[in-house]
Image 1: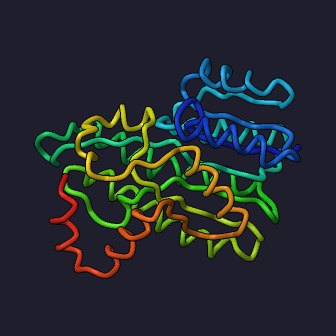
Image 2: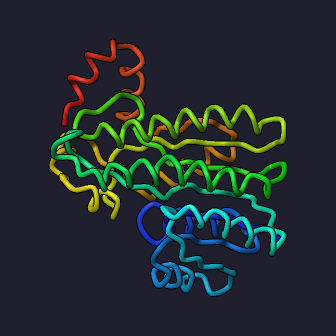
Length: 250
């Protein structure tokens, strides 16, 4: 049974990935949607009555969720053709003062540990031609004061992607990290402080997902949407990090 696994699928970018993967991969038999809000997953699945969905209510902050996912994949003898690691969160504030300890741990646990463990769990069920998509961010290009933990977590996602892309290449499995700028999704509503991003061009989630799927099909390891974000990536490589940190204070 061929399957696609999408984490954080209940809204925003994850829901958009689901919609476009359904259209772009008609050969996939089941779409496994993972999020805490099962009701939202079921509403999304109802948009495609002719396709089969498995809606799984999991809290990826709970270490037991990875074992559960692995057991379900083994039970169904799943052949995972696409994995989208979209689940993530952000927070703002200064470490040791305005940044909440609980929020800081949540960012690390969800953006780093959960993404790593979902990948670790799913890869044994992938074969040649399969694709992994990891949602990173332009924040990965440079440490961002007041969003330090978030930017560090996304730097991990990009580094992790580059490493496993090389590890999995001999098996014919491609890995792609998408590095978008801010988008008008529930993610940024939860992170708060929308005004911090007022001077940065916002990305269109529909275009971000479409471009990411094209990049994944081409086997690209990194995809950065929009001209502004590509320029930012170039400048971040060119200038000394301390200059970039001053320029990116939010």
